[in-house]
Image (cartoon, rainbow, N blue to C red; front, side):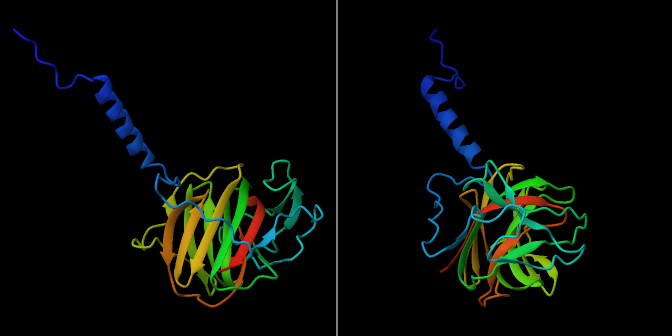
Length: 247
């Protein structure tokens, strides 16, 4: 009697197909990674204002930037630091104060950049933090109580967009899912990551480590404002390669 082949027998062909399917399925659940066919990060515009902090003096505040009021706990400490692994050279900008207050928001804005439609990016490395290990980019900044910020946090492993209106921070959700608290993705502590926002009118694209994570839509702040860098609570964070371009 002829023996019938088992329907569960893996031939080389079926094994290959199954392996490819498994890889595709796994890739689909890699947060923060662009799948094949997804849009790649566009180049930084040539007209961008740039700061890599390599021409500044260590242990001083960076030229061309103005610290904002963090809201509580006294002034933040923004200083140029020596950094052997800085992406652009051997120096970076550090937020060095470690005041343990959750509603504290140290930030610093560029003096010579004002625009409404913007492409803002920065590279960052979280160093330490008990309440938070965060880094953010700000845009359409009016003052210390009114602006947009997109922040990444290595203790929460997520990237979230907020608006700060009259000093109140509100989560903006994700386009099509406004109740979402940003997007979960691996934010590597003590390693360099990149964060970028491209904002045109009410639509904002959020990019992390060169992958597009999500979009946000909000029309609270549509007028031109400054751009800058942001941290939260007791986050000690280093920054490099800040760029801001008007679109």
